[in-house]
Image 1: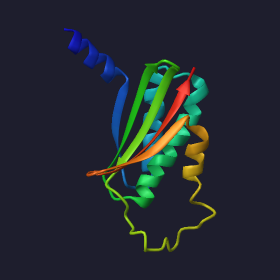
Image 2 (image 1 turned 180 degrees about the horizontal axis):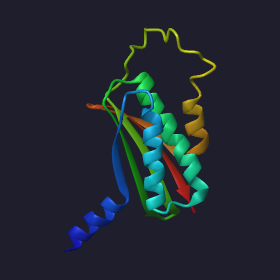
Image 3 (image 1 turned 90 degrees about the vertical axis):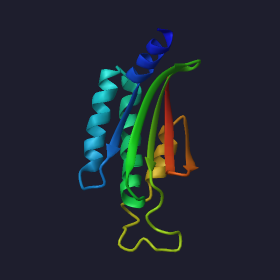
Length: 141
């Protein structure tokens, strides 16, 4: 019974959804994330920052990686308060390092990583057999 309760509590604070590799995909994921954060009653002081992080990580997956991509949100209590973790996992880079980003305007792209770093309490990248997971945590005290 305790294991079932633990599973239910964890499920209530974790959400996974695909990141569609199409025009409008980021907007759809952002709307879905906003609804989930509202359902979880995530504190307003981090919601806007969290949605911006979701947008940046999802955009990165659509523009620079191979599909499929998946967004995972989790909201957990820890010693410092509540932590919202945003992860986007993709199938790895679409372009090799040697290939140029022809047609990508540097004035419109390339700031996402800096934005995530500025908003997140902690952030990072995890490489694994299935691809790449970029993650960020925002802490509400």
